[in-house]
Length: 307
Length: 251
Image (cartoon, rainbow over all chains, first blue to last red; front, side, top):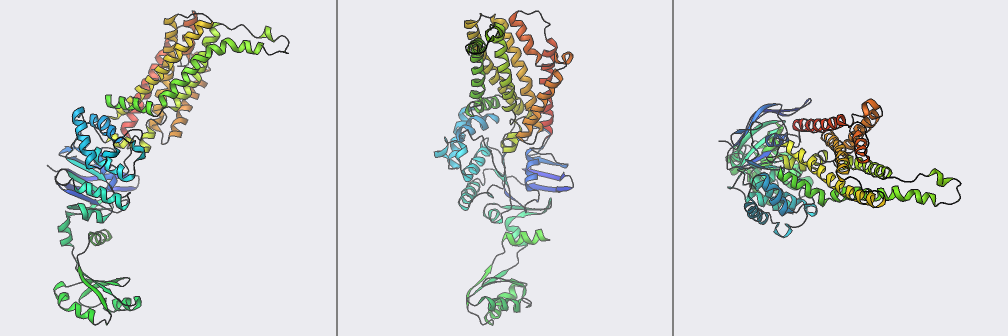
């Protein structure tokens, strides 16, 4: 049984096709990064899965139960992109007195579970403070805690770190990474670095369609195009001139410059390993660093979205 | 539903809405008989106007009840429009509705909990106002029949429930709190204007107040059962309409 499955999901807002036949399958136990540029349809997908919006056409299932036919909300916990709370409540009462009874948890279980989650979220010391005074990072961590309150088998996270500062992002990503193996996580984001850090499976969405879905490592392997970075200790003009001069070399499929660093996209890795260093040495410029680098998910994402 | 009711009750208390509603109604409940009794005396005491004492009538029990009902109705309707106008649209706008409705909560329960608790808050407010008004009317004028006075207040509460239900309906339809308040006020004005026509007015919710006064003063006018039916019908229609609209909405 798939954690999430959609078939030909469409969502139209007048002439705008936010989703245009989305087919996706999420295997239980994965941390699925749902990647896409802004406006690709990520939030729309999550809103349809949670029942907050209806699809124009197509079907979706959560843990084998069709969305819109029967109660699917017991199966998942959801964190919207900007979680909102009743600011007059404190975190503990929000979890124990409000969220837990909505899922039918007994008071003793609710108190125990809330204590566990508040500890996991690093909110024990602030549990009795009104949520109104919480920072964004604290709200986000409380958002994940409330989504986990009823021990769901699936966690739906919509851009969980996009609104946070670097420290807040680090805290929340650590929290999410710590959940690996306990729950299936479906996380939408446009921040590729976050996906590389915590996700094991990636789906890339563009213009309302899934353009690829694969394991993170598989994706990196499949679309790997070796790149060599050369960091020169020379004038910017000299570095740029050299990059221009070698861009068309048979060993390379391209060359780009960032300051004094030249990125050389290699067309044949084996041949390049034998001869590229000689080519660089022929530049006659002092070299600080010569390094083979792995393509990032960002490189792959940009390439696929542009296609 | 119980969880939602508890949350609504706490919210009314913690955001001071409960205190505001109860305090305003209580103040007018206590002050109205005093105003009815002493304002004429105060005006009479103003010297220098010839014949003023003859013009100012001696206050009666009817004046006290009239004063009580007018004051409480005026402010009660304003509160019934202001308090629930953000009930649905405010939660949708802030994002709290999405947090709640992505959990196993029916939209009907979410909406009805708001109406039930608002109705309860107004009931408590009217109860306390009525106790104050009853006591001072008894001390300053005459002791009223408890049953009839209770009935007057029950009819007044039913009257306010219509405005509460209509405002919650408006809050479901509108895209902003101001718009919700505007729709609620528009519906109130519509009923007020239509109510000027006597043949129609006697069936509208505001006619409940007149019937209540008659009951307390031992009048022999017609019972406003039609207005009771219309009021209940409007409450049910507004709430059912709100639930139907809310179920179709995307949050």
